[in-house]
Image (cartoon, rainbow, N blue to C red; front, side):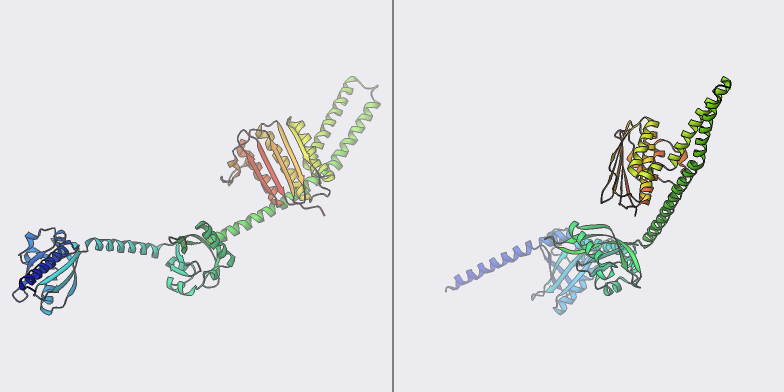
Length: 506
């Protein structure tokens, strides 16, 4: 091959390599500085600068090339990077060195440097601006620190668990809630969360709910403390899923509600005691009503009947021998006696209607409906069928008194013209429905949103007073293990619905 041709090929290849190097040098994202060394590696003069270094340093290459690095980039010496240059030049061993970039004594950025020596003796720095990454890292660390402080100090328990029942994460509050000294101790000790549940079915129910809905809120369960005692926990949690929708873990919060549960239990027991006492008082009241009614019938009623017979006999005997004035007074006495006897009968009926004892609930309601209509002018329609066997007397008494109270409320507050009563008795229970076509009322009165403490029913008026009647009816229903529901709306009447388990009078 011609030596001239060979030389040209080598020159062309060299030119291509130089061009390729220059393109790589210029287009690299990192900064590259090449230094020539003088004075046996004590002085470093900038020989070449790529566009990446221009961007990072915010200086043009013609401002940098040919200058001593100590003058062009003072931070190199201040940061200790110049000493790295000297070591690398002397040893030939590359070094990785991260520096902080300062301006007027303040840290303004970070630079990650890789320094090495070429065979020509030149020193090269390949570096990149790490300021943004460092700032993000610092923000992340601060955020993690804030989260950790909250996580460690919050009084509510925080947890993260696997779906199969292992704790992944526990905060100190949760660990202490269960009696453990540290979160690590609890995570190690509790190998299966289901064993914490007093009733294992609660854990099954928890998983079913969270897998179905993706979360649970206010999930309450009794669980075991480390010392073997039982505590009540309320859990709010949600399922964490991957992109495919598979559950990765459960995470949420837990609250110790043992004291609240204890207070609720004590309150329920007190309410039950009060209701038991109330039922006992009602039974005593009904017995006294019956006794007093019987006394009135056996003594006052019979005496009034005897007086009426005697006065009628006297009136017949002396009709022709007494003055008209005496006749008039005797006639007035007979009328007054008849009125008094009628009032005594009404009192006896109000105290204890004999028809309830003799003929049963439906007959008593029909009888009272007729009396109510005659007194108020409100039409009462009663429908239903009596069962073949009598109900327990306590049920009959309570339902009859509920009917009385409902009709009294209707007369006093509703402005109704018609009342419809239906009594149905089957194998499932006793159903009493009372509906009027009156003005109705605000149903919020029956939701128990207002406090009754310190209120005097005798001083209440209108709807507020009617509320006490509703409370009385509800308590009577509860006393016989029944349910009472009131449906009402302004201008659309009121409906009282009572359902009671059937108990026959054995």
